[in-house]
Image 1: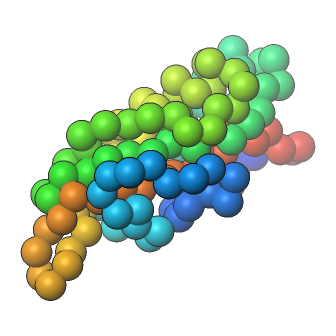
Image 2 (image 1 turned 90 degrees about the vertical axis):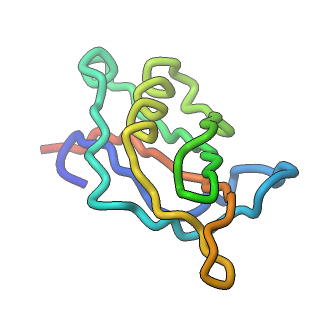
Amino acid sequence: SPSGSPATTAGTAAAAGPANAGPPLIHHPRYRGQPRPVEYPPQARRRGWQGTVVIEVWLDENGRQLRREIIQSSGRPLLDSAALRSVARSDFYPHLENGQGRPSRLRLPVIFELTSP
């Protein structure tokens, strides 16, 4: 990612913990359009805060978000909140089984990393 910009990575996080009961966990999200960049909170940038937030998103059969939950915190509430806002702005296609949309879950790591110029 560009210098000082957080990145979202499609896929699951290895340290995300055991799967919860519920819809199937999908490992490769399908975005409607290009995901918007995550906004790095200015206060976090000034203080040098970095970290990864893993968010589990529950989607309905149409790909609409029903629920978002932090399953791995960055340890910084400011970064966690920014990650939740970023994921809330994302649009997804539904998971398809036999051509039909089905409820599903995604685990999305949001990485906040400051890099040297």
